[in-house]
Amino acid sequence: SDSPVNVTVTGAAGQIGYALLFRIASGQLLGANTPVKLRLLEIPQAVRAAEGTALELEDGAFPLLAGVDVFDDPKAAFSGTNVALLVGARPRTKGMERGDLLEANGGIFKPQGEAINAGAADDIKVLVVGNPANTNALIAQRHAPDVPADRFTAMTRLDHNRALSQLSRKLSVPVSQIRKLTIWGNHSATQYPDLFHAEVGGRNAAEAVNDEQWLAEEFIPRVAKRGAEIIEVRGASSAASAASAAIDHVYDWVNGTAEGDWTSAAIVSDGSYGVPAGLISSFPVTSSGGSWQIVQGLDINEFSRARIDASVAELEEERQAVERLGLI
Ligand code: NAI
Image 1: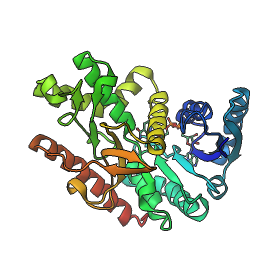
Image 2: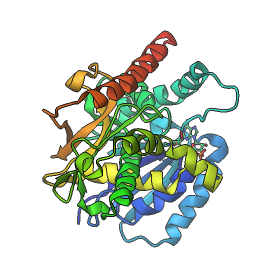
Image 3: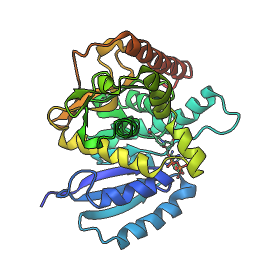
Image 4: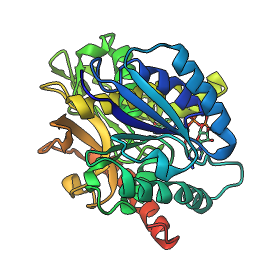
């Protein structure tokens, strides 16, 4: 059989980590024939809890799980790693300004980028989940100059999946019949879920909906603010759904997207669709041969243009803020 793939998960003792690790161990991240070695990174205070999760992973007796190691040092955790899921981040606490939040996360993602640069495997693929995900990914990428920039991505797949599900409910069609939906921009409340190129059973989704008020006043805000809705109802932030989206993102990156469809991921812009080159922004993307490509040639109407521009402007502001703070 194949030799194990090294997968590093940061924030392994957190709530997303707890949902994510068991799905990785069961083979859902890479595919059912690929053995996995897990490398868990936590801060020293949470190492013991991560070791507890490692014991539970052992108790799963997963045939594809080739080992679990726990670390509190990024250099060790990323040594030889093939896939890095950067989940651990500093949350915004009451009274915290955006600058403080960016600075605290810079203190996490700069050393992690450096550690990836120093020791990860040549085929390293990085997914940043921890918020602010796009800008954390940018910070890590800028501190890994020897790694191709396109190996650093941020997660908008949860937003994509939320949009699929909302559209499926609106039109009473299964999600499996929906294709070519797009999340543009930042993983934040400014993100833009775009139905204008989506297809439902072969028909244009915006035409099938035929309700611009629903689009502007229900669909877009519901998807963009779903994280707050989950906190309100569940009493805790999205965890299993976030883990599930991380699985989807990496699975598609490694195994490719389906012919005739695309998905959404925040990847380094090459300037496509007027998104300044170098920003890590969500696009319609396909994957083949282990790399993402931005879907080209889509017509962007006025409705979409204004919303894409607003989200990209927020990303540009975040980039300038981390530049001013000396984090990149
Ligand atoms: P959590 O607070 O339960 O767990 C975070 C874990 O990260 C903690 O165990 C903490 O000790 C650890 N950690 C902190 N700094 C670390 C470091 N330097 N190295 C290694 N580990 C470190 O949080 P949860 O619910 O698991 O969420 C994690 C992140 O994912 C948050 O930033 C959250 O906002 C984000 N998120 C992103 C989503 C997306 O769609 N992109 C969706 C949902 C959550």
